Structure formats: C-alpha cells, structure tokens
Length: 544
Image (cartoon, rainbow, N blue to C red; front, side, top):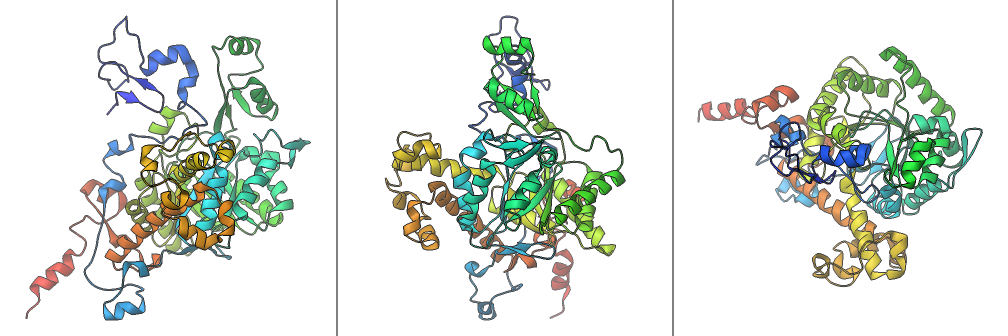
C-alpha cells in the first residue's frame, strides 16, 4: 500500500496515491507536494530522509509481504521448568528468577547482563551528539555498543599522514565515554568498512586500544546495499571530505556546484563510501580476501573480531556464515532489511533486501547445516526492527541455539535523546553540551515531577550501580537507557517464564510458531496448531 504521506521525506499527496506514488488524479495547477513535485525543486536531496542530524529513520512497508515477526506467535506451557531454579522443585518459581544473561565469543567469552547490543552508531551527526549518553547507558547496563564506520574519516580534528590516521580525537572520545563506565560486562566494538581499512583505523586502534575493543569488519547493513552516507551543509566541510578520498555528491569542486551553493539552490552534500569488493567476481575471491583481512587483524594483536552483514540474498548470507566459522569470529551480526539510523537512500531502504524474519530463519538453517557438516558456527546477533520484548524473544528462539544477542539501533538511541532533552532543562548549563532541545519540560514529562529522582523510575537503580558521588556525572540519557532496557529485560523474563524456560540457552524453535501457513513454509517453523498436536492426541487416546 502506498501511503498518502511520507513523513521521512516530508512529502504528501494531495489526492490518493497510485502505486507509482503519483496522485490518481494529477492536476496541472497543483501546488504540491508529492515526491515528484518536491524533487523538481530539491533534486537528489529527496533521495534521503529530511532533517539529517536531528532524526533517525526506518522503513515502513516491509509487512506488506504478509510474513514478518508479527506472523510468529509465542507458545506457552502450563508445567515444567527447563534449567529451573531450586524454587521450581516446590512450584514456587517466579518470573524474576529467569536469567537473561548471555555470552558470545569463539575462545574468549564476552559476558553481557542482557541479550541486547546497540548497533553501529557511526559518522552520522546524531550519533556523535548523543554518544556520551548512549555509551554510558550501554556500559552501566552491561551490553555492547558498536562505534560505526567512518568515524575517523569524518573527524575534522583528526590528523592523517601518508594516507593513514595518526590522531582521532573523536574515536578516542567515543571509546573513553563507554570505558569510563564499563565494569567488565558488554564490550566496545569498533567497526571497519572499506574506507576505515584504507585509512589505517585498525593500526591506530592497535597502538592504543587493542586489548579493550572488538574489531568488526563490515559487509553491509539492513538499510542499504551501498556504502555509508552522511549529509553536510557546509561546502568547506564537503571539500574536506572530498580531499579525504570520499565521494561527495554533488561534486563540491565543480564551479557550477559552487555557484549553486552560493545561490542556495544546492543546500547540502552527500558523502558516500566506496562499495568494496568490486575487483572480485567470485565468492572464492571474497573468501581469500576476507580471511587475509582477519589474519592481518590478528597479526596486529586483536583477539576478538566480528562481522556485520546486511540484508543480502542467500549466497552472501551463507558466505558470511561460512567465513565467520572459518575465521573463528566471535560474533556475526545479521541485519534484516528496513533498519537504519542515518541517511540511507529512502527508496532503497524501503525496497531492497531480505526482511528480517526471512533472513534470520535462513541464517539459522544455514548455521545448522554448517554444524551438521562438522563445523562450528560463530555466535550470531540478529538485527532489524527489534524494539519489543516479544520480538526479541521470537528472534532469540528463531535463531536458537546460535543467536546470542539482539542488535537494536533506533530503539537504543531514543533513551539518549529523551534523557539529554530532560538534562538540558534541569541542568541549563549542560544544555549545549548534551544537545538538549527543550527550554521547558513538556507536560508528558512534567506530570512525573520536576527532579530526576521523580522523573526517572531507574534513578535509584543507577545510583546503586554507580554510587551517589558519580550521579552528578552520569548522563540523564544513561538513566533513561537503564529504564528502557530494564523494561525490555523484564518483559523477556515474563515471556520466558510463560514458556517455563529459565535460561536463554534453553530456548528453542518450538517456543514459537507460525500464525499462518505461508510463514510456516518460508521459515520452517511449525504451524501454531501443529506444535504439540501428536502429544495432544496421545492424551486423548490414553486409556484410564
């Protein structure tokens, strides 16, 4: 279904839209502003969501397929206790006794308090603005966070010599923001894309932080099938990025583009990364290149290495799973279509790639096939539209026993935004530093109170965790993060308790079911009334 209004692009149809996106009745005197009408004025600016640097965006229409995590149901049972606590023996077990702790890794295990991780927050300005809040929140909650691609390359304060990075204050800041509050659970993961590899980011990290980070190689993400983008408004910054070797679109070095910028008909520039692997035409070539890159990282001293892949088709998915095993990677993150936190081309985001449920079901199938052939699969993290306890449960059960984490992007950023806005009001001196957007508390917040102790349900929990003296330094966004993740964790505990599963290791695919036959066919899940049907018939046939 084509929507009449597209909030991401800031466009709307006057009449009912046809499949083309045009109104069914297109008038010659129309004053706008459908997407085509708006693009006549804004050009390629309309490729991307509006208000870059102030927003995040995710695709809206993937459920049109009729197969999604919404067509999966969580099953329950009335008796039993898998990995149950001692209280289960007396029938006294409580949902709060369910453990949602997890770990991942090939040789060296990384322990996490919750089975969540914050996906790659890279060179987008919104990630930089709210990083301190999000990093501190993940650290105190004991979950990993990923420093995404191109952070070094776009850092205007960074120093490069002979094409290699020698100084990056922004990378150092991001790591220290997390590690300041890190207590041994979770991890700081640093992503490398093709530009980062060319710029020597791995070597830079090896000199300063190799024992404190996991390195993540990047093939792609769910939002797009090309390299990363950001948008800059300043032509001087665009010129800086072009000299760094990035594609800048439109080309800020052309006289006509400079003139268009001066007249304000061009008001921004998109920075793109290289595609990577365009010189390779077979999966065997990718294998050789990838295993060589992993070896280079290990030679630099990195013990823990992961891979992030996107919503590509089955061949690339299988290749990622195989190579993660061959290279003995600590984690493989598989990101379904539609996700994204930055400036992915909107039409691409909505229409390319494999939606999460289908991709994750195949990932589990292929990992199991690998195991049947005698090779251990790498631990996996699933990404793509997760924001509720129910969907997290479904993802972990769907991927069992290989899925150890659920990766979230926008859901993990929202606490940072909200907490920072509140902090900007309650601590006006901090407003600019935390990028607060409010002058006063809105009624939705003020109804809870006027102090952080009143507003945040998690305030005292965080205080107990970090100590009273540290509360003056903890970002309010981190307190908001604790509240959000505590809610997700408790919801997950409740769902697991209803399944009588007391550890994540005890989850399996029979804990979920397909709500329609098409979902059953495409995912390999059993149809909802087929699960337990044989046992049900035995109960009824049993002679008393």
